[in-house]
Each structure stands twice: as structure tokens, then as C-alpha cells.
Length: 106
Image (cartoon, rainbow, N blue to C red):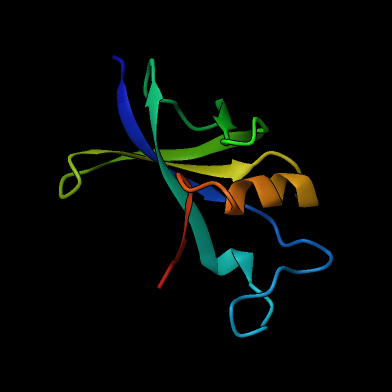
């Protein structure tokens, strides 16, 4: 079943944390990066999912869960960045990509 899903990506904190617009460190456990993605089949927990950026970098992630959201009328696929830490290049590709939006969990 091909379709569009919303990916909600959790990334780890970096050793040298990124700063918000006020100069405070961003706690990535409290934010998710979101984007609409086309998939061939709805991914299941444990499945790997490759996520692209405009810069050409591909981010490896692992699906944590896939849930139908009635109000959005689509599946939301929660993913976690595959590695224990994120490189500055991968992080830069993610935050500078206009398709990815950083959203606080609150």
C-alpha cells in the first residue's frame, strides 16, 4: 500500500549542542523533526528507514512505531536516528532543509 506518511524523527543531542535563537542549548529529547514522505508500504517497528535531505545527505533511522492519526488522515511514523550520535554534517543537512520542520513536543 503506497502512500504518504508523516515522519517524526528523534535525533540525539550532540556533544557541542546546537543553540536556539536566544542562545540556549537545544535539548533534542524535547523536539522532533517532521516531514511528509512517500513510502511503498507502511513501515513497521524495527524497520530501517532512509530519509533524504535537499543537500543530498541520507539519514539512517529505525522505525519505533506507526500510528494512524484520524485528524491528519495519515500514518505518523515515529523514527529514531540510527546512530548514538549525530554528525555536524547530518545535523546541518536536517536543520537547513526547508522540508524538515523542528517541532517541540509540548
